[in-house]
Image 1 (cartoon, rainbow, N blue to C red):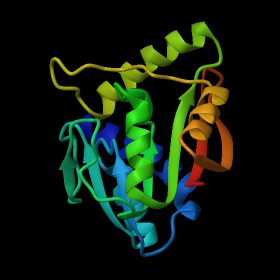
Image 2 (image 1 turned 90 degrees about the vertical axis):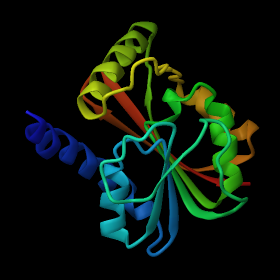
Image 3 (image 1 turned 30 degrees about the vertical axis):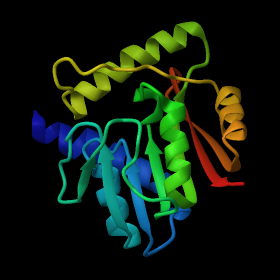
Amino acid sequence: MKKFIEEKIIKKRTERIVDLIEDLIEEGGEVLDIGAGGGWVAKELEKRKNVKITLLDVTDFNQTDLKLVLYDGKNIPFPDNHFDASLLIFALHHCLDPLKVLKEARRITKGKIVIIEDIPTSWLNRIFLCFWDVISNLISVIKPPGEIIAFNFKTVPRWQKIFKDLDLKLIKQKEGERGKLIRHVLFLLEKC
């Protein structure tokens, strides 16, 4: 069963995500994957774009040979403008304080910030997203006992306001769908 999950579900999801973001990342740069989980997206991006990627997360879920840095979920332990790009791939809705994490991503990134988030379309859809998030994370990464799971899903207008308030310029927004019940949006940002 584990082999099936890794080969079919995780591999296919990873390839879809990297297909979506690889043109946004410059060849040979230094990238931080914030909330990296198993590290699969970072590993695939490293292969395709010859970038140096560091994984950052609050818990060690790393399933790759990439360097992982653990942090407190608030203060990213890197200097200002250290990375060419930062990734927040289905990560912000897991953060207890997503605005703080986004502020920190802005601080440590000199280039692009790439975000992909699930977007609720109604209150009922928000409930479904929470349910789906628990199920999909149990399949790919087992949460340690006692770890708090946040469900900070936001609408597109809410994200746009947050970006504006944080002085982040929205360069690109691309909407996609994963079936009729789950909608996600890619945001490409730069500092103003």
